[in-house]
Image 1 (spheres, one colour):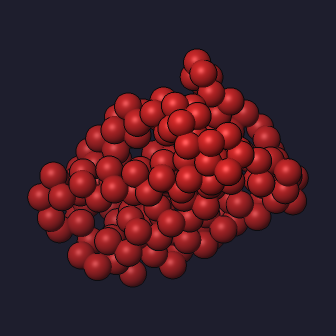
Image 2: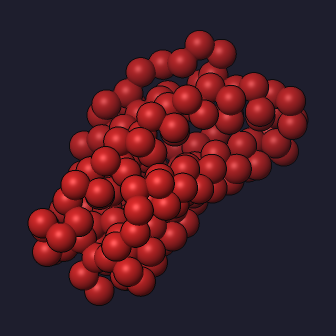
Length: 172
């Protein structure tokens, strides 16, 4: 059940989008939700939630940003970012399982920034064969850096405040 709720959270956050000039990929609330799902559900359930989300998209349920779905949408320009969702949730979930975020806020922030960096590297990296290195950077990475920092700050604040208050945070 937790994985379904986590997948629904990411799907709902996908509806919070806005276009960025110079790129076909929208800025969305998905990455924030991915980090929070990993933090709240831990490694196994967090990864399962993202797999449920990606599975829903693959079978045609419009859960991706801008209501996209289907295998074609998943293999398009967003493919690397979607793979990054899985890895980011796994990384943050592993950290949650390891110590339940009993660490200073700045270490949580570094974790969240690292998870966003992973998303951007995978997303931009998978764009390189399609559009080249310079365009992948300028259209697929650079426009999302500021949003990634802001969402990392928000995720850090939520996790820092919620740790110890909500039983799901850090439970294996």
